[in-house]
Length: 275
Image (cartoon, rainbow, N blue to C red; front, side, top):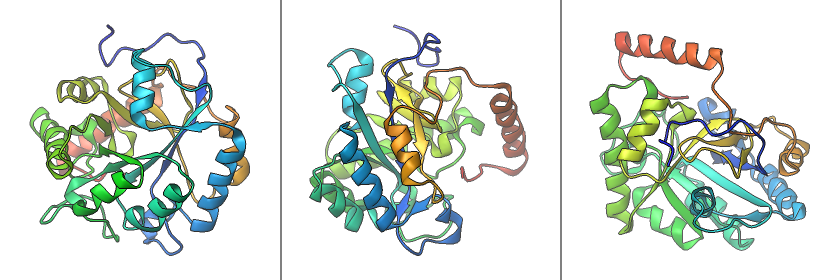
């Protein structure tokens, strides 16, 4: 088996849209507003998904498909949510459950656990106790680390703690294994991907603002980050397999250069919010 940091063959697979949402609300804090959609817009996105004929699945189903354990449906689509904003176990989960749509929620444990601390700016967040409600509504739970730091800038000790401690908190709260991870703001590297595998994760999602595929890498699954300026036409294009690059593909020089700059900055100033 290829190591988790290996790059898959550079040829097109079957496009799989993996949507990345944050908050769904009308009046979000300014710092997250760019990555927030209104309930009305979200409902229109769900209508587009229903009309597309695609089959919504969770990250576990995609993991099984990428690992060759089980076939994927012919035209899968994934809905994922990062951080754990307060709307998630309330109206957002209710809308998804009402439509019978599964989803995956990646939770930042330092922002939702009692006494926890994170790098996320102030915002209305869910609580750790509400994670079980998400599962009851048909969502799968994954880790989004403890503090939401830029993982590819951390030393080995801090990186290990971010990966293992968040996993342990969620597993204790839910009573079962949590094998999936999302990198905060998608920041990762070959070293981060290797350590994610060693920490016991089966998959890890990045961002990349690209379509995933049936040939994507299990430790940096591409997602499409949904911003408030995206239209239903954008969503429809992604559902059709258009409008974005298809993973896997190698990091460009700008991505690598930006990573080294952030590492140098972290060495001087300490861990930084990934956002």
